[in-house]
Length: 191
Image (spheres, helix red, strand yellow):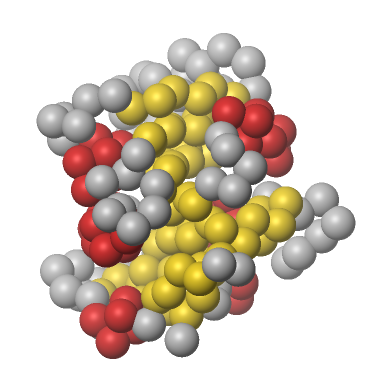
């Protein structure tokens, strides 16, 4: 589903997943680790918020951070590489900078455009999100499919847009598919 409003980002690797704890961050950490000594990588975690005062996008009551968001989006740079949050793990893996974009789902493009204004024009980005795929066309969109669970609605919405499905059982990946991920001068691709 590419529309005229879709932002083309060939230097972005976007990782989605079938459900929570399927391995998006583990895959992102692995890719960042593979390339961090060769190129400056920006890490990005995107949380799509559907209702400002609703339940946590991750389920349940959550931490309250998204429900306290002012405006249509919020961009926070992660500075703590020692923490246990996903953004800290991306930073520790070797990303030069890491951002967390919390954004109202219907304002995804606006939030992404605001973030892009903060980044170098030729930034190499490794991002985690399902919903972001509706606003951007990355160089490569990978979907982590966890065989233990049924896909969540945000995954079903973008499943057909995935360039490659990476199977997991929650512990291990189909490594042949991961080894095929390449960053070229033109952007991310899968051999």
